[in-house]
Image (cartoon, rainbow, N blue to C red; front, side, top):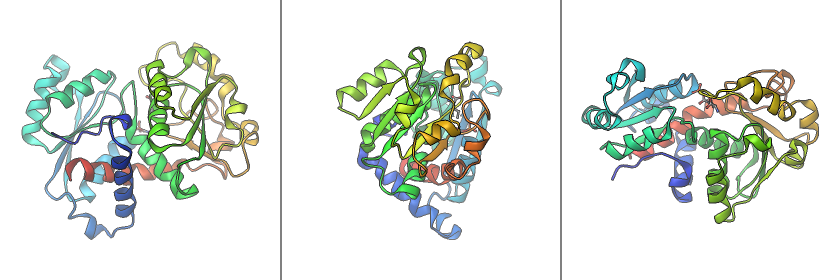
Length: 300
Ligand code: CP
Ligand code: NVA
């Protein structure tokens, strides 16, 4: 059975912790030592949607660990001409040691994992973005110490990144306050999953209430890749902008996180993203280190 990295709630807390421990360990390692970890291993990456961080951090990560990467644009593959995802998975499994996919439909990820004989990694779907949250937790722990018991606030769209945060709140045992408009609440099945497990996830409409006393404030774009009704979303989400006034409702030490890409002056003002509380570029850097932890676990 392959070690897939499909979603945070699909893995036990101990495994997630082990991945983060390896990520931290490799971050401190000399390049020469890293290069023997995944020698001769090849990662295929399929992109159905654009990417800067995920693409570059995975490619650099596998190469630094001694392996290699093949980057595939789904539209340029036979997938784009009707070959099934299952056949694609079976063929790629004969060539490479792991497959990462970024795609619109989460079912495509699941079908790929079902048919592949090698580990499959979720590089973002319309449902979730688990690799991002691993890097984010790594970043928070570097700045704040253990995440357990901390309070994090999410303000804005209850999107794919928010879903992975909800999964993480349960697995890593922290408080998560989510402020969003009624129409853009997180996936109800994910919320129900968290409630059944007594996860400390609170959903509210008032962003100031969400950030009060929080150790970190997080947001994401108002219009995700593939989203429609951009104008309607922008008007619904306008009260959820992370600006100086909202950060003042938190504490002077509260960190600001954003998975990037950011749309400055929409979900976050330049004053906040470039301000002293922002750790967004540490977060972006940690994508590289976290991917190494994920790859090492999948291929270990
Ligand atoms: N945060 C993130 O996944 O960025 P990319 O879309 O650039 O990969
Ligand atoms: N929610 C965003 C995240 C981008 C990394 C999107 O899906 O477009």
